[in-house]
Length: 322
Image (cartoon, rainbow, N blue to C red; front, side):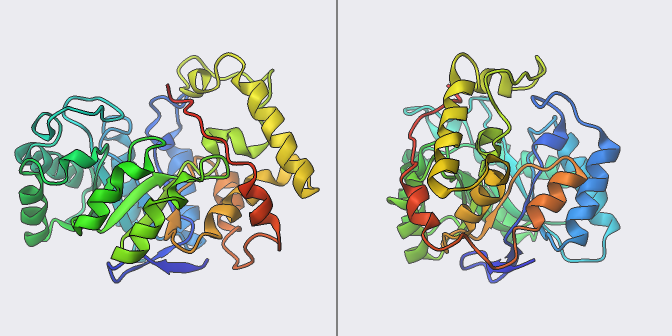
């Protein structure tokens, strides 16, 4: 496993982090806790030292599982979690006052709940689970962050930028208030390269890249006949004609690279890691197979010569979350 600096924080995190949304069960067609615990342990065995979870993932279920595993291990594991919006609106719409979403007392209360779920004394990275750049100089959320930091209850602060809105975090990055940002970055959505990544490099902000496989779209395993459980959010994400669209895009990528669709997941992860601004990528992992497959990508090889330029030609701006 290779490691990278998390911006200006002074800590080094594994290139492959553990995305722990799926183990919360909600919106992913269920999850088996024993399998999730095994997967978490295996990830740590393979060198993963960054786990990203959230209070909203299974109403604390993901945090509880993460905390159980971290407490059982002797290694240094960095845990990042998130404060859900008080108005429970994802993503954050424009024009909503920050006082309705992240008032200071609410941020503090959520951090305490997360600490209780995790069973830990400190959250390494506390993130706001949605963001609107107009909030940068609004409200009292910064006071809560600094109080939590001064009390030793959090190490660093960041935000999870709204889906497919990377420029909606540039002002915060420039303000110096955030140590990290979490953003969608993959072969299809390359837009963080335009404004956000240059700002992060300039201001020493760590980047956690999420959705590297486009919720499964970049694995080469989804086609018109793919079915998901009714309680799996991907049934909506890939609704209508989207499965066919994905399959055609994936086939085009494979043809352009002269490779098979079976290896596309590895290529997609290598594409993300070939961007030096990225500190870590956090694919969702619920099984030992996925953990071992994803961790193996951190071998320092990157993408073959010329592939990154070709993959840039497959940029596809769209929002399947809507």
